[in-house]
Length: 223
Image (cartoon, rainbow, N blue to C red):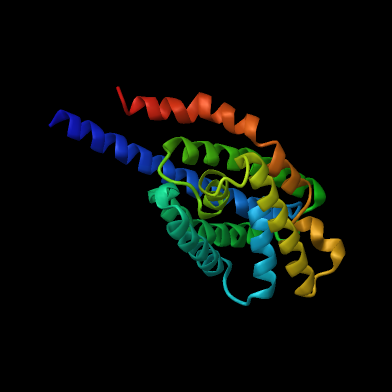
């Protein structure tokens, strides 16, 4: 009986960490969008789609991720878990809400404010990612695509495939962004310095949050 109770406590803690991680990541994406100095590769694609498809960002995010979810369920459902669905249904709407609030509070951010927002966004998304990843209750539908290609289809190492999928997302996002009538000079707002940082330099900060915060939280569930 005690083992069952401990298991349920552990499960609840992992779910709470996943939920908190997704919410924090969603808030960070809203901050990135306000900074307009580039977002992560998948959000670059979402920004491009958002420019050409006239529906709310939250709803669009659910639709795109539902398509990716179907792909994952057909190809290899082992990567799908509770956290996958939390991400699918919450991230887009929380991002949309966060950006709306920030735009009301800071309607015309200066470059200094945008840079500060970018720095805050990077720290926040790394913290949220550490919680989400350490909870280990499934990956996002976008992450699952590269995992399937690497582990199931054996097309190459995950890190190389992920770089390829990221590049494809950025290119498609930029093309759609321009097709929607936005000037080429505005591309750095969705694929800029923030995109480069999130694609290549987030690892060490995520590891730091893993070591100092996320793993101790997870270990606490076993005491």
